[in-house]
Image (cartoon, rainbow, N blue to C red; front, top):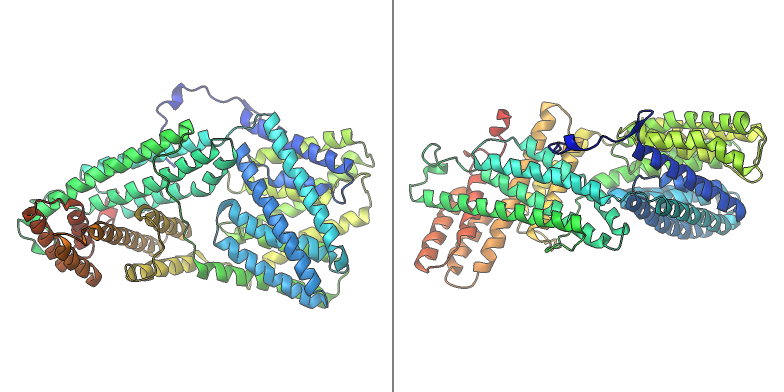
Amino acid sequence: MQVDVTGAAAEVRPSIFAGFPASSWAFAIRVWLATLLALYVGFWLELESPSSAAVTVAILALPTRGQGLEKAGYRLLATVVGFAASIVIAGVFSQTDELLLAMIGIWIGLCVYAAGLLDGNRAYAAALGCITVALIVVQQIDSPSQVFTTGVARGAAIAIGVLATALVNDVLAAPDYHPVLASRLDALYHRAIDFAARAMRGEAASAATAALMLRDILALRPEIASLTTESSSGRARSAAARSTIVDLVSALSLTRALMTLPVTSTTVALPNDWDRSSSDLMRICRAWLSTEISRRNADVRNSLNALHTGARPSRHWRAPLYRSRRIAAENATRAATAFVLIASLFVLAGWPSTELCLSLVAVIIGLSATAPDPRSFTMVAVLATPIACLLAGVLKYLVFNGVSEFQLLAIGLAPVVIGLALLISLPSRVLSPLGRLVLVFTLAVLAPSNPQSYEPEVFLVTCLFTCLASVLVFVANLPLPSLSGDRRLRLLLGEAQRELKSLGTGRSLHLALEEAEFRDASRIEQIVAAAGASPASQKMVLEAMRCFDLATILRRCRAELDPLAAGPLAEAARVARGALVGRNGEAIVTAAESLHRTAARSTLCADSAIATLVLASIALTPSQPTPGSNQGQQL
């Protein structure tokens, strides 16, 4: 992401210690203290599994207060849902272990499907639904009567972990996230301003450049929800941030439309040999686009000001998300099948004490459903589990070595928890998730208790099954690989093309024009994420951008023509709508000219409708280059 560093040079560089900034050290110390507080309360209340409270702290280890609170809320909600599902599954399908495991596999598939339709912490909550069932029902598969007790104990431990994290973050003044988000949105706003200025100067820009900008804008969507839990002005800031990203997408769409216009009608041939009177239409279109881009950028600026001040924005946009049900269904089927296959292996092998391994299998499958690349996440898990077991063994048998005092436990955990929390704070897409998984598995394998157990046989079995769980999930992914980038590209592009063909005739989503643009842009973000560097993938990105541009233009035409359905311009508007349905560029040009003449005779202004018709005629004329098609080679 490009950032504006004009004023950054004058800022004081952050303090660095041992290669990490002071903010990372503060975050790591907060995680350590919250872990100790959760364990202490768990010991004091004599919980069945106090380590679950510490694991909750590790899962909620996020650098800002709002992010942690939002994830905590979804974790509590998902735990309640998973607990209810556990009671139903264990109570109805506990006749045989095989039937119970099959139903758990189906539940895992349903949760992964729901996660595939969501993003951010909402997707995490959906995945946690299957994780909760696995940790409660699978581990009590031989004693279903204990499901309720186990579920209550797990819920209590999670609540303690959530409260410990919230308390430590408040007492130690964990930073808010809205300043970071505002700075990132400011950088995107300046990129959009520069993009529009280049378009108004007649400079070319590729469709790939616009697609990358859409990706960067949409990447902020999951993070905006965390603003709600930061402060009393969180809801207003969240609404302002949503309005900002929706208006940014709209401004970028208008700029893309401006780039389709010839620089001047005298130097570039007009589509289909328009007569010279049609240059008036081009002039109207250019003037309207320039005005709309300026207005939209002003809306972005106003929303950014509202975000900075905590005021409510003048406009409240929703930010709808596009998700492919086909992709979600395929991922869900694959996850359920993998769990059932691994469970069948354990049933056939007849191994004793495999409940821990099977529950961890479900945990890894559920968490991988929230990762951009499930296969890569599984590989990280394969690497993290032996590291976690090694760290847990060092702590238990070399550092603690038989002691049970809480003070020694706190001192012994300090280097491990703080060190792994520092890894979590890194921006690396490999080290950060690796640090989080190692911290979670280390606390789970170590399982601090009061008094602490030091049975080597139990520890070795736990380590064996923990490592085996990640390896089995990885092996199960070999015959059942996750969707490739090319497969996702083709599915997403096919859905975009089908929606474009049915635009205006299919079911209305009851979205405003800007919200519909944002929904389409979220699909572009997924397409860019799935695309590789191959020429075939880049061609698909360009085709997806063509669909995005054309769908936006057609929606604008409909939005501008609908108010003209009654009055002196009704007949001209009806003819224009018929031309749009036929997707005939020449007929649309003729309809635009007719609307222009009728409006002039009636002394009415229909410039916005005329401008959108001109854009539609250019986009639907085969001889006219679409945005980014021939211009894309110039950047």
